Amino acid sequence: MNISYKKLWKLLIDRDMKKKGLEKAAGISNYVISEMTRNENITVETVGKICKALNCTPNDMLEFVSDSE
Image (spheres, rainbow, N blue to C red):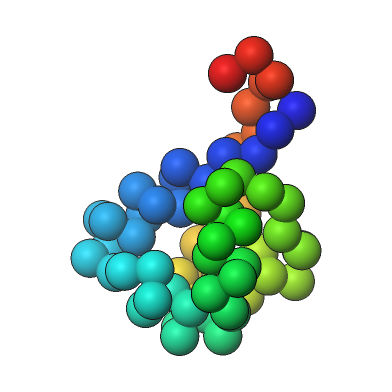
């Protein structure tokens, strides 16, 4: 199983927010944004920070996809 952050990127577009704005609002680093851009794993703590900043749930920002996708 792989992880996809497509939902997060769509959420940012819907809220007219850039990745830099997410960094600031959630208190996360550019490195974490880079990891998510490459669909790499991030910590649960980071997921929590993003969810708190965007007032959303983890299900609103990420999904697990099968290896074949």
